[in-house]
View 1 (cartoon, each protein chain N blue to C red):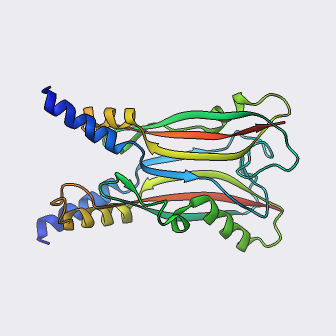
View 2 (cartoon, rainbow over the protein chains, first blue to last red; view 1 turned 135 degrees about the horizontal axis):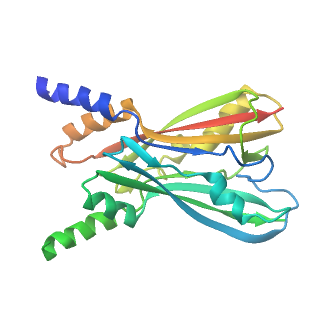
Length: 120
Length: 135
């Protein structure tokens, strides 16, 4: 590898390290409400299927929107209801890829999907 | 935009769909694992590096799932650190291209004979999962 390539590699590492950071916090979700595991003795009353997007400007360097699990999950629950078998999946959707492609990566977004069972 | 360019963009976008997909789930656990706000009872942080192949069009996560499933890894680590725990809270999840990922991705891209260094034969992405054990 020549000197220019090495310099480019080091520069890219320094500039892009930590880019496209997606942070999913659960700060507003009360305890004992949302579970990745099954809840013993609970009766399934519905299913959960929600999506959010994380977005960035300038090739992932500047975050402009981050997912909030409490906003996606809490509105779906009535009194006494909980969520079990939660699956969170993050990926690039068709629309994410189109937007990124059309803007040459200046704007990027990533989709966060929440699925699970609502139980009483 | 010409039809051929539009077609190429469509093919690229369709190919990218679902790329660098990461699944946060738990198939089996001895203790209940919840997603909830922190209670500040001893935070455990688990890092995982995820590997994606062929310009990220092909997800290798399913192939090497045991190495790169963040929630099972975080639960196992938290259980080891807090024996006899009655439950585990996942309080935050983070994904990013860490400096190590960028370094790996750059070197692999530069060395990729298939792509001429223009795209990646291998991509890596790092996840960080914060957990706490219920006492």
